[in-house]
Image: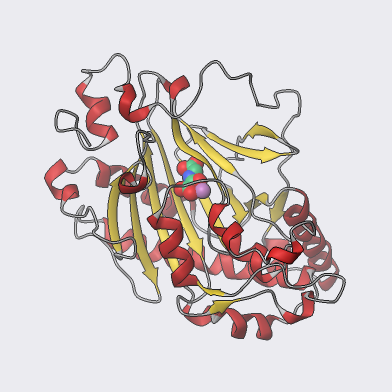
Length: 355
Ligand code: OGA
Ligand code: NI
């Protein structure tokens, strides 16, 4: 970034020195574009009751599995309630993330990673090295937490809270995956083997979106899909996430206490396009600081992920080539964030119109 500008958006926001955005760096939205938000549709993002998936009668479970499958098909997003993760832990995680961003800038600067697979990586925007003239209004912390656990040493409480949070959210993710496989008549064991889920690569992300002087000109994050199998998100009560549905954007207002969960690109690959990853974006706002924390559950890093044989047929040939999750991650995190660009690279050319 230019020498006279602070490195992080938090610093930029805190300084109060900018009543307008340094445009050469941040303009990423066209304020004159017609609204693409669907305000008429009362967003009915489906709700999944995890307790009816795990501790219920076979009939209740079957109903919830069906609901889960429909949610994946119709939205690619759903809210999970009765997930068993204590509210105290969820709040403590948000607090710890906020405290991390409140550290001295020097402490955070040390964690600006060199490569996209650094297990501890602090940053601003998405990938400034690949973004020419465009930045996003976000600071982030990304941590690899499974199979090996990584945490910054500061703030002091962070690592303990993260360890619990990572374990609990991984458990929720795995239960949801089981239900999702069941909704497609896939064998859990086969899927665990194909994706090596015992050593699943799990990433924790904390996002900070400070108050922005001109939120109409900038995205917190532009439209994109996530790269793993499932992402679980919760936030500090400030809304800002939009989800694409039926060609329009829908503002999401998550139920208090819920996780907002979405299918990622690897869900789309492994299910041969039966369940798709959904585009979403984070909006900046002028008033409040927004914090979101995410768990991204993916296959193990060196597994080559391909459409599973049970979902490939002569009528529905394999739509994607196999890549290791590591390759995908390097490509996704090492370039500009652009809708579903990396997934498109893997699409088999002769099946362009199947999807
Ligand atoms: C992400 C993301 C949305 C949010 O980090 O991939 O989509 O609301 N975040 O912070
Ligand atoms: Ni995302």
